[in-house]
Amino acid sequence: MLHQNHTQLKHSTLGVISSILAIAAGFAYVLMILGVGVLLEINQDELNKKTLAVIVIGLFFIGSILMNLSGIGLVIAGLIQKKRRKLFAIIGLVLNAIVLVSLVLFLCVILVCGKQNAVEFDLGTISGSTYENKYFGLTITIPSGWEVQKRETAKMLRRKGRKVLAGDNKKLKATLKNGESTCLNLLTILRYPLGSSVKFNPGFYCTAEKMTFLSGIKTGEDFFLYSKKLIQQTQVRDKYKFKKDIYSELIDGKRFDIMEVERTGGSVLIQQKWYVCIIKKHALFFMLVYSSDEELLALKEIVDSIKFK
Image 1 (cartoon, helix red, strand yellow):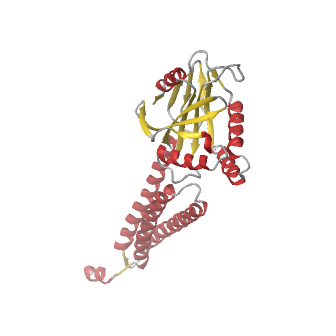
Image 2 (image 1 turned 90 degrees about the vertical axis):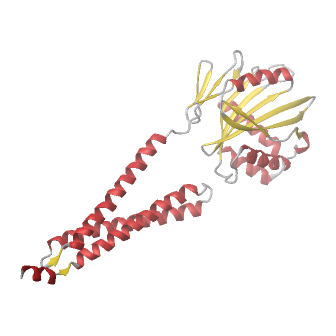
Image 3 (image 1 turned 90 degrees about the horizontal axis):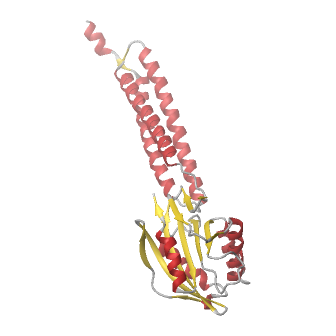
């Protein structure tokens, strides 16, 4: 008789609904995680897409939380409901608990990984004869007697250079000006003090450019091809000559693409050797500027001293 009464009991409607909500919340969490992956792939300059992705992920997150909490509430109601079978209420409890615990674990992993990888961008520091940049894991040895330029001085020199390049080209001026906020000077070393009475003052320049507005650049070669196009728009394009095809070398195990450039400057033929490696969505850029093989050898010693952690 007791068995017959038990079999005649209906399933808890609240338990069934809680199970459905748990499954729906689980799908919403999966879509949210996929959305986070898509968000990370969207370039910083695609602001509209990025904003839309954030809104969609936020809606999925809020919706899934509400479904999860509602499901748990219905589970409790289903368990205390009289004259109803508890099977679906128990299933709903298990499913909602699994989904909720999974979300908490996912958020914990995100927070832990974020803290481990949260090395803030820095311009680097100089201690004795060593420049160190923790963001890139980079150290450079400064040769004895060479002059490290203040960042304000280096910034002023870059602005003068951009002014010469742009000339009266307003569009190019705007492009170069936009680059001011994304191209950061890390280290500038000159062989002699600025303004010295010498025929030529060789230098080593290290900068990092954010790929914010250059989403198509994935390699150093891409960066150079873009630079070539930019130079062709300048009023001094005839003064630049690209000596050979782009090639690559390893610097302490990291592959740098290299482009060699000649530029006429008064009576001096200025030689430049550009090194670029894309690291952490930045173009890490070294430039050697010289006028003789002897100066190049001295600058190569700086390159040979570069180490990555």
